[in-house]
Image (cartoon, rainbow, N blue to C red):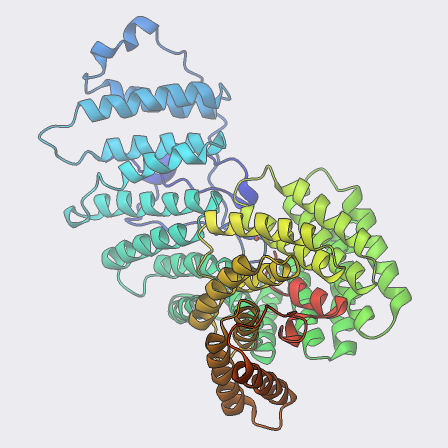
Amino acid sequence: MPGLVSVKTPPHGSQTPIRPESDRSESGDPISNSPAIRRPTSPSTSTSRAKPSPDRKKMSPPEKSGLDKSSLDNPNLGPFLLKLARDAIASGEGLDKGLEYALRAAKSFEKCVVDNEPNLDLAMSLHVLAAIYCSLGRFEEAAPVLERAIKVPEVSRGADHALAAFSGYMQLGDTHSMLGQLDRSIECYKEGLKIQREALGENDPRVAETCRYLAEAHVQAVQFDEAENLCKKTLEIHRVHSPPASLEEAADRRLMALICEAKEGYESALEHLVLARMAMIANGQENEVAAIDVSIGNMYLSLSRFDEAVFSYQKALTVFKSSKGDSHPSVASVFVRLADLYYKTGKLRESRSYSENALRIYASPLPETAVEEIASGMTEISAIYELFDEPEEALKLLEESIKLLEDKPGQQITIAGIQARIGVMFYVVGRYEESWSSFENAVAKLRANGERKSAFFGVVLNQMGLAGVQLFKIDEAAELFEEAREILERECGPYHQETLGVYSNLAATYDAMGRIEDAIEILQYVLKLREENLGTANPDFDDEKKRLTELLKESGRSRNKEAKSLENFIDPHTRRTKKETSRKWSGFGLRS
């Protein structure tokens, strides 16, 4: 069988390369692993991608008379057209010409199917066609092509069919990811991993690579438990098949550190990073060692070990300046971390100086700098300006970040996170109409991109509900609180502080709507949860008890009282100060 193409979208949403047929057929692997997924927050290293062969001979396109519809049932035409499609791309003739040939090749293979037998050449041509669509940024058209492709092979027929199915599912997962549809993307990766495991066994090194690939997707979707289980499996496989202190193990440990950090396991994260650093030193990877030093500094900062954090950041800064230059974005990223550290230690002059130095680099980026990296840096600096009580400057940076990302595929969830932060900022300064509008845009994007089940989505709904209360959109606010409660109960559990806050907000809203019994029922439930989890000596318990007592008195006097102000009932923990709000949103997974 001709080598199947499993084309993946490269990091940062750039155009998808088309692999020449020889790249796959010469490998001899029955199931190939997927290259690392494009996630700027992932600590794992990227695998190299095959490039079109530069010495491919340029072929002249056939005459139009030779490509009429009557010739599509010629069994020799499909392979010829597919070769022309690849040659058109490799020779620089153009994606549009390659697309024309690939479309005709797929039609020819389809017409030549005999007795409904699965035709792997058809699957291959569909993979190439979808890859060209992705390279043109037409991801919506690529997805249905790949959905057709995964229906062609029958896995039970052997390794070739398994490879075709695996490649199709992984490529479809990448396409959904570029469209921001993370839930559908993860389902495709799971199917691909299932096929690969059945073909190769549980402990093949290529299975480990796909496990890490899927783990990175779970990290981006804020599904850290699933990511951790997959990463543990990857480490187990690499311990067996890779030498000690291998690059593969280092990549696994960096990803595991990211997961542990997200779950607030900073000591465990630090342990994984130290081991990854040792592996990188053993392999002579100086720049990767510096990148790990930045991550180690982040862990020390989270543990309030400030002197050790400064030492780690300065080590990384020295390496980045010497190897990449003073104006490289890696240098700017360390400046941002130092600015954050010095603010937390009360050295405001140093904090502002490092922030301004980072901004100067992002304002005049090097030509090869990805816009996603610039947007991420500006978003982090905006959080520091919020701490400096300069909301206008912070808003300016966030809006500039959105402009940089709005035309980039796969960035809709990141944009939604930034819009949610803007909504919080507007809420804190009392600009409730603008806050509502920002949250509305963020929620619409999150719904459209399959994020309606995440804890982050629940938090955004709660914040939008608070803005609705201030605008006297009580019915809409109640609906938002109810949806947020359902999500946070499922994702975080009833005892989580965010869930308890939503309970309190919903009780207050029910009270304002005249639904006294519903409000009392919720507050009684909240009191029970707080007592079980925090104890009766906790001030939150006293606040809830006073609110419940007041409601019970009101209920005893009149069931039909007029709606009263929510100011005395909204959960005090949701009315944060500017500094508290900045900390919350800057640390809630706003990077992709």
